Image (cartoon, rainbow, N blue to C red):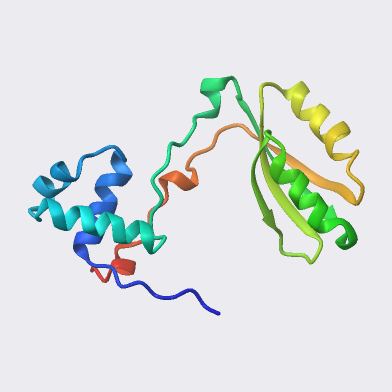
Length: 161
């Protein structure tokens, strides 16, 4: 079933832009910026959250905790162990992202570490100890230029321009 299409307008766009810049921005300030009624802004924010268009949450900064090494790791997973492996990967604190890859047995993940030695141990020992997992390749990520928390859809998705 395809995801339902949610109709968004310029006010939704303006609200999302404002919250994207500062998720702690008060509805009264967004109302002042947009010229809309504060109550309307609150209702729109509630609707955007209920429709799963936005999620308001704290986004942690890994380097603030000493996690300065990032890596993209690509795995080949035995289908007989896939469910167990995915659960295990998602429970690992080093892992920040897990997704199915293009191939039927491929899984990609992003993980964060305090140093290169921790990355090496993770690949050589932690992942290698999981039954049904084969690390096919990995890449150090020296600098992340844009994260998912910085992504915005084009204005056309809001019916603008």
